[in-house]
Image (cartoon, rainbow, N blue to C red):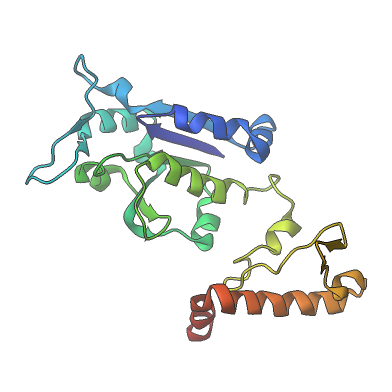
Amino acid sequence: MKFTVLSLFPEILDGYFQSSLMKKAVERGLITVEFVNIRDFAQDKHKTCDDIPYGGGAGMVLKPEPLAMALDSVGAGQKRTLYPTPSGRLFNQPTARELAKEDELVFICGRYEGIDQRIIDEYVDDELSIGDYVLSSGEIASLVIIDAVYRLREGVIKARSLEEESFSDGFLLEYPQYTRPEVFRERSVPEVLLSGHHKNIEVWRREMSVEKTKRLRPDLLEKSTSD
């Protein structure tokens, strides 16, 4: 799978692809990445990539010309192109699974007040929001989506680990996890996890998932009963 990321600040992204699981996925050829600096496609001597919005208002907007040329250079018109933005549809685990089936994804990293709408109209397949808040960096939002997607590709993480995660069944958060030592600061590991009785452990984990979801994300349980 290939991730192509268009950005004014590609240096923000570079370190992520050289660390941890992503580094291993790149080294094994499961993931490839290309960074495209939008500023390289600016036509004036100052490499200008933003301008004031028509109609007035605060902030600046990324100009369409450099972005269009950058997108054309990677063949974005024939590849699924994503624009992370607070005004997009909410990104979730089902969307991550859907995107993980693609051979290549192109990301447009916005800045300032966003990008010219004509770029969205012509190139963007999905406008995605990672939450109801605003970031100054489209790079960070893109990395969130990339992280959620690449780990679902075959060979990156063991399939069993993915099956037991939060949202693996749609509506429940993952149960609490424990490791050695058995007692830490007078807090003990639940006895059922020490019993070796797999059926009882499975029942306990399910109960804990429901309790945790009810406590932290009751909206998920409400959604599960309404669907």
